[in-house]
Amino acid sequence: MRFFLRLVALFAVAIGLAVVARYNPGNVVLFFPPYRIDLSLNFFVVLLLILFILLYVVIRAIRVTQKLPARVIGYRRHKRETTSNNALRDSLKSLFEGRFGQAEKAATRAAELPDNLGVAALIGARAAHRMGQPERRDIWLASIEDNEPLKTARLITTLDLLVDEHKSQAALEAVSELNASGTRHIHALRLALKANQQAKNWPEVLRLVRTLNKHDALHPALSTRLRELAYDGLLSDDSHDAESIARMWATVPSEDRIKPFIAMRAASAFNKRGLRDEARTIVEKSLAAEWDVRLLPVYRDAAAAAASPELLAQIEHCEQWLLKAPNNAELALTLGTFCFKQKLWGKAQRHLEQALSDAESPATVREAHLKLAQLHEAIDQPELAAEHYRQCALATML
Image (cartoon, rainbow, N blue to C red):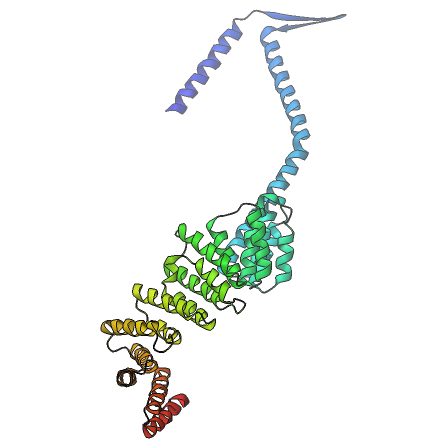
């Protein structure tokens, strides 16, 4: 309908122009001595219109010709950008698909465009690393070393790849550079945690675990295990003497001191340096918070001197624990050992025999037989002592 309306309007204008031109008696005279040109006004208007159209076409052609080199350059640039962007997408797709050779080749094509060089270099570095080509990986990373906007991305990628390669010292250098730039986001902290764990830098591991826990960025089980590993490394350091191990233990938060594994390692370290009173205190506090049979062997090693108030206190503690765990072989062995040291022969024999009947591990069986053999020797029963020594030897060979 609209088309027909426009067609009718066009015809109306044409008719109007024809009528006006028919009844237009005007003329135009052009003098160019000695020449004179007479034109009707209608014809003059038509000539002006034709001239305008010709001038427009000529000027338009000139301008198009002038812009042609720029358009050719723009076309080539657009084609290069399109090719590079397509290559960049292909490299990402291949990287996620695990086709690392194709990913690196596509990244090489994408890097031909300067705007894509940074991202393409990161993709190429990861692809080369996955193919076990550290030299090419380092070349890719070095190509964007001066790219300031990509500094954080380059350092995070470098740190991630070095941690994966277990190059802890080089990874720690990247961590230091990241810290100098003020980067503190969660992924960077996790990578720094792995690097310090590989380097056995346990104080820094503990600090990073606490920081990540504040952001709920670690699973509780993983956080617990990392703290255990860190404290195990710190407490197992043979360079500590009695004073330094006590000073280091004083820096441990109270909630960590009562964890069974940490308390066990600490008590063992204190026993090794002759600090048995401190070791007993550590074990007793931990067992008061959470029962764990792993603490009992180090508690036996921390036995006080015979006929001392401390040894009697240990026996009392074990008797109280026995009410909670009546059939625990380790606890019966511990109580029997303390009673033997206190020369409570009857109680010692009863608890050691109970430990034998409830024991499941060869180590417990072996130690119970050994203690019973020593007990029978002490009360002049050599035949029974010899039998228990024989059973202890058999248990040792298992």
